[in-house]
Image (cartoon, rainbow, N blue to C red; front, top):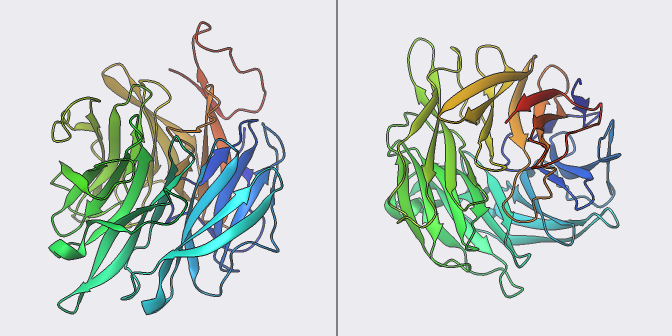
Length: 396
C-alpha cells in the first residue's frame, strides 16, 4: 500500500536519530520526530495496529526550546514506557537530555538534562538509546570536548542503573584526538551494551563492547579500516546473540561511490574475532553523498534486512540475506531519505510477520512517512498475514 503520512505540518526530521519507531505490547505504533519548525521533540501515535493515520500526542507538554532540541531516539520498555534521548544544541551549554512517554496515558514526564560536556556544539550530533532486561535506559551520544584548544567530536555512553544517571564514559574521541561520531547502541544477550560508530580521523567503523551491564570501559574493534568518509552505521543483535554491524563506505571521485557492507561477530568468540566483511552492494548509485545518510538493520531471526536510500534515485530500498547471497528490493519511489526501522533485542514487540520503517519525504515540508514490509514465513513458524494493509510481501 502507499506509505502513510505520520506528520501533517511543519518541517520534520529523523536524520540525526537512531531508532525512532516502537510498538507497544498490544501492537500500537509510536514514532518519535524532531519538529524543526517548533524545535520540539514529538510523539505520534498510529490509530490502530494496522494504522491508516497518525496523531501527535500531548503536544502541550512535549520538550520544546527554540533553536535547540534535536536528534531524538527512542526505545520502549516492558511496561510500555517509551524512553527518549535527545540533544540540546546550545553552544558551550549543550547537553544530552532525556524524557519518558507513558503510552497508557499518552503523556510526557520526567524531562531532564542528563549530561553537559560543555565545550561547544559537535559537528554531527547524534543519539541512540536502548533498554536492558531490567528496563534500565542506556544512551550513547556524540558530544564535543577540547584537547589543546581543538574540538574533537566524541562518542559518550551513560546509563541509569541504580536510579540515577551515572558518570559518562568516553568510548572514543577527545582523549586520543579522534573525531568519532554517529554512535548506535544495542544491549546484547548478556545484558551488555554494544556500540558502533565511525572514526573520521582513522577512516574506521568501530564496534565497542562494554565491560559489564553498568559499563565503565569498552573494548574496541575496528570493523572496517578503509572507510573514506563517515556515515551512520547500524548495530543489531540476532536472537542467537550474534552481533552485526551494517554500514556505508564512501569512495571519492567525479561521482561518489558508496558501498553497503556488513560484518558479523559470533556470540562466544573473543571481541577481536569477527567474520569476513560482506560487501552487499558495490555502488548504491552515483551522486553526491551526504554525511548524514542513514542505514538501518533488522534481524528477526538469522536473516538480515538492511534499509537504505538509493543515492541516484532517492528511492528507499532494502537488502535481505538469502542463504549466502543478498537480494535487493525497491520499497518506495520518490524524493526520499533517512530510512529508519523498528528493532531492539529487548522489549522488541516486533510483529514477526512484518518490519516497520519510516523515512523522510523531502518534496514537501519535509514530512515523515511510515510503511511496513510483510514477510512470508513458513506456517510452522507463524501464521500468514491476513491484513490488506501491506506494502510488499517478501519471502524469507
